[in-house]
Amino acid sequence: MSELLAPCGNMKTLKAAVSAGADAVYSGTQKFSARAFADNFSADELFAAVAYAAKFGVKIYLAVNTLITDREMKEALEVVMLAHNAGVAAFIVQDAGLAAEIKKAVPDAALHASTQMTARTAKDVTALANMGFKRVVLARELSREQIRAIAQNADAELEVFVHGALCSSYSGQCLMSSFIGGRSANRGKCAAPCRLTYKGEKKSGTLLSLRDLCLIDYIGELADMGITSLKIEGRMKGEDYVRAVVGAYRTVLDGEKLSEQKRAKMLNVFNRGGYTDGYYTNCGEMYTSALKNPYKGKASGKSQALRCGKCKTHTCKHKG
Image (cartoon, rainbow, N blue to C red):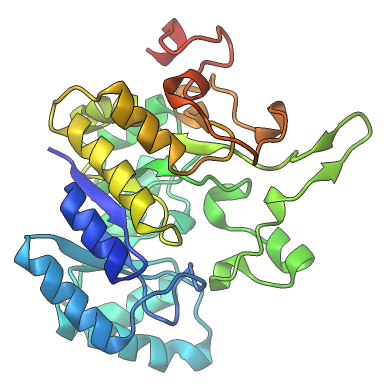
C-alpha cells in the first residue's frame, strides 16, 4: 500500500496528521525551507516532534529544499546533521550541490528529490537515483499516462502530489515572485503573484491562479502503478485542514467508502473556488478565473469539485 504523506508546520498540525492516519509527515526547520512563512520547527521542537511521531510509527521527512548559496552551505549541513541526530527519516532537497554535500557528510542519510528538481521522465529519475536520491517527487504537471510510464521504468521510489495548491510556474520554480513581489520562491518566500488579478486585452481576473489539486478519486490507481508515496500539500495550513484532508484520503486508501459528509468537509475546509484534476486527466477546468469571485464562498461538497471540463460531469470517459 502507498504511504500517505501529510504536511506539518508545527506540533498542532503534526498531531492532527498523526491522529488522522498519516504514515509520514514532512516539515521544515526555521531556515532553508521552501515554506519560510510556515511556523516550522526549532531545534528543540524538531527533537520533540520526531519523538512524538515515533510513538505512533510515523516518519518525519525534513524539507531542506531551497537553493543554497556557497556561504550558507556550512549552516545548511549543520541543520541536516542536527536533524539526522534527531532521527529524521529523510531529507527533501532541491539543490544538487547540497545533496552532494549531504552524502559526503552523512552517507547513510536518505535523500528525496524535491518536485522542484522537475523529474518528468524515467531518465530524469534514473539520473537522480545515480546522484544518490532514494526517492523522487515527480513534477506536478504530469498526466496519468506519463506517471505510469515513469513508474514502469523507475530506478527509485516515486512520490506524487495528490492534493493541495498548484503553481502556475513549473513545479514551483517561480521567478515571477522575485520580479513582481521582490521575494524568491526558490528561497522559500513566495509572494504568490499568480493569485493576483490581471487585466488582458479581452478579459480580467485571476488569470494565472490555478485551482487546488484533488486526486482522491484516483489514489487506488496511483497505488496500483507502484507509487510509493501520496503527498498532500499544505505546510502553511492549520490543523483543521490537515485533519480533514488526511482523514478523507486515509479512508479511501484503506478501501473504505468516503461519505458525502466527509468528502464535503475535505473540500470545504479550504478551497479557491473548487478543485481540479486537470494535469492528471488532461480534461479538467484548472483556472479560478473561470469562476465568479473565486476566493469568496465555499465549494459545496462534490458538486463543484472534479468536474470534467469537457463533459461537465464527475465521472466521464476522459477520467478513464
